Image (cartoon, helix red, strand yellow):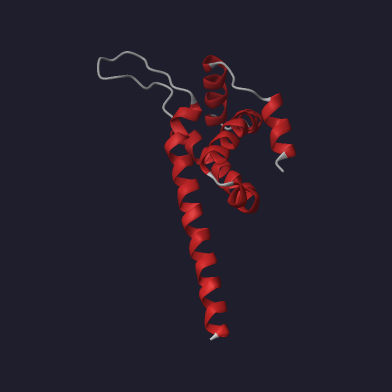
Length: 132
C-alpha cells in the first residue's frame, strides 16, 4: 500500500543525532536540500506512528493524507526546533527531531480520525434520512 514510502524509509533510516542536527541547522539557514533530506529521514517515523495508531481500514483510506499532514507539521517545526536547548541545570540536551515532533504527529493522527469519523457519520445520517 505504501510502497513508495516504504522504499524511502528503507533508504533513509534514522540518522545520527549529530548529522540530524546539522541538517536542521542548514535547513534553518534556508538550504532546501537539507530540509528535503531531513523530511526523507522522518518518513519511517511517520509510517511507524500511523501504522501503530490506525486500524487497517482507516489506514488504507486516509493513511497518505495523514502522512502528508505530518510532513507539513515537520516543515513548520524545523523553524522552531531549538538547537541550543539546555535543561534546568544548563546542560546541553539535544533531542532527535522525531522526539521533538512526536506529540504533534500524534495530535494530527487523532484529529484526522475525528474529522474523518464526523464526515462518515454525516454521510450515514443523510442516507438514513433518505431511507425513512
